[in-house]
Length: 477
Image 1 (spheres, rainbow, N blue to C red):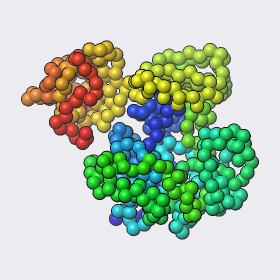
Image 2: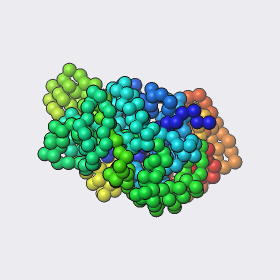
Image 3: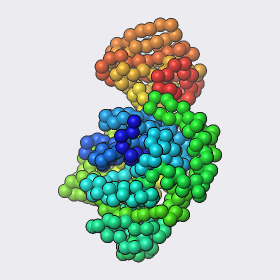
């Protein structure tokens, strides 16, 4: 039974390409602890913020198939049980995602309010956030479609703007009907906007009743609702996940909620939010929201700095030494290094696109890849061999599988490995090894209480991650 009438819906899409090389398609920014002193990700901070609101149900998460276990693991780490994790087989912008969430919520309650949030936003003043939320809730209960406009403090050209019909009062956020939405303006137009109290940044946060948003989407784009209904009718439940039908969802238009509803509805209300909001959309914004030293530098990792100021310097792996730097972004990972002027960081997105066009893997994937059972890191490789470090969490196991093109040699570094090879069950301890022949059925498990670490040496004619035939898998892959 549903105790409360508000369902938070956290949209976990987006690839965060402007925060490369830390954020990549395989592990984008919303899952990274970019501006946290307690090592919590932006997604986790978003979920924790909701726990301070009243009469809130567990959250509905919408993410893509590739990131499902990251979402589930990070939410479990907060001791939060998700109401649902809806898996999109491919992205279709915010209107279809919100339609899916509304239809799922309507199965659980008569006509609940949905609170739509992005997973990668930062809000510093949570008491102000809570106060403005309550104002929006009152409008939503009246059947209005509420969006929160961020009070601008600079002429940003990277955000869309909302024009209210009336001047907005930041200290008394009563809300106003919406006049129009404006796409990202040029600098001259943005400078005019911030002098006018009718304009706010478009935050992408919304409050509305489920039936109201479904009716509005169906009025303007009935094919979205039709496709989402068919996708859910043919969906499958797997662990915490609701896998929607990819064939039905493929026909769904790729449209934002702004285009599908907000630019057309007469029910729109904008409420000003002045709570230290940031979408953490660039390295400059990460620097602005990070704790800095006396020289205005943010320093993290294995870094030595002399006579540098106004910099963001981060080392994930190797020693980084900075001498006399100013106004720079320096981000080092095990396989890529970014060095950029802080005012040129928007170009990073273009570089990621160029890397993708040239099929350079560092543009999309990290050397460390996360799986529900743990992670693996590619250490070194050539055309016919590869070396990995594999970490298996206590109580977890890989699938029962075989490979067509490669053999494997495992060396246990830490812990004790339980290994199945064809009809044999073996226990391999630290400093011991085992050979897995090409074509052999095998499974690696960790029944111990500490992380199992092994070094895997692969040899064969093809070493891609798709060379796996699974026979059994506890994670439904």
